Figure 1: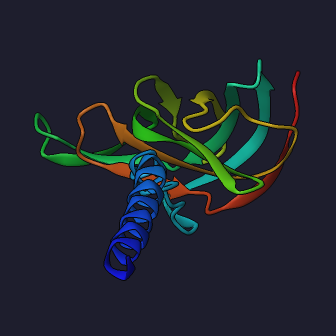
Figure 2: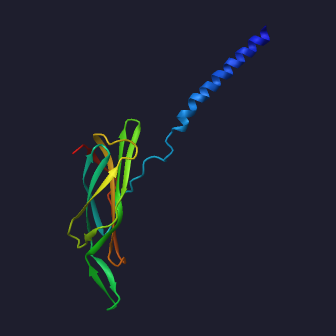
Figure 3: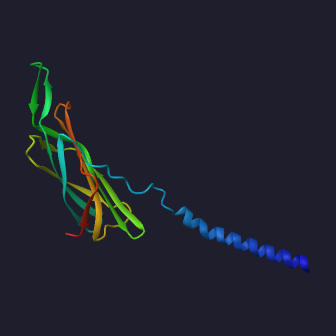
Length: 176
C-alpha cells in the first residue's frame, strides 16, 4: 500500500509540474522579441540647425512631426571653371523622426524616414517638412512622449552636405 500511494503522489506532482510548464509556454512565446524601442541620438550639428516645431496625432495611430531646419550654402567644385562656387540649392537626402511614449508597462514607439524634397540652404531660410510617424506597438495616447528628429541635406551634385539631429525632446501628444 505504501508503494502505490507513493507512486500516485509522484504522478500527481509530475502532472502538476507539466501543467505549470504548459501554462508558462504561451507567455514565453508571446514575449516581445523585437529589441524594444529605437534610440534617439544626441543633438549634433554640421552646418545645419533643426527644431521639432510641433507634434499632432491623427486617429491615435499617426503622429505628424513637423521639423524646421536651416542649412548653410554648399561649396561645390565647378569642373568647367576649375573653381569652387557657392550654391544654395539643396536636396533632402535623409533624416526622419522617432516618437517614443511610455504607456504603463508598454513602450509605444514609431519611426519614419525622410527622403526627397528641395531645400533652400542660404543660412537664413527656414525649411519645414512634416513626417508622419505610425505607431508600431500600441496607439498613441494623450500625454507626454519623447521625440527626436534628424535631417541630412546635400547639394544637387552630391559633393557637400549639412546635417543636424535634435536629440531627445519632450512633447505632449494630443489629437487635432
